[in-house]
Image 1 (cartoon, one colour):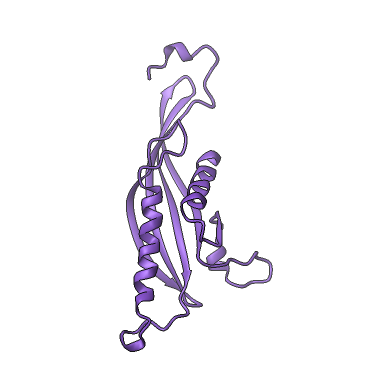
Image 2 (cartoon, rainbow, N blue to C red):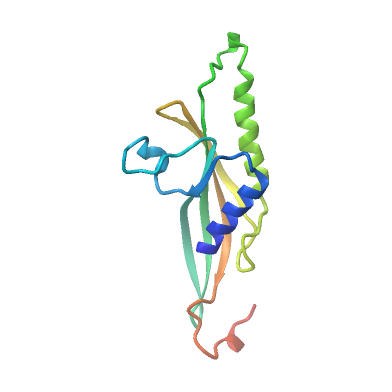
Length: 157
């Protein structure tokens, strides 16, 4: 699974170089400005909350139906009510979320995985004027890491 996280982060960095922070999601946004946490800068993307349901194919080989969550977080310090004259910032944030989706939709992380497919999305706000655009992608993973010696000839592709 570690290669999947790295591939996704590299893909995002390549397609969206304007992001100031890309990392594994370990609760940085919820931690806020606590002293014992590394500060997050915006806009940022966090990759995490992987979940897999595994099916045994035999001889130590498994295949998963997996989900991974990608969160784009943007600080919202612009006044965006309709008469503010800066309400287009709302559009800019939503276009940034769409750009991230387009960078990852159908992206194949490794040879052992199927392409990413968006299955769920939502947006929500956090304290401190932070807007989060969350997208969940599904993929399958073929894992032979525990395959028994000599079993390769018995496994059908």
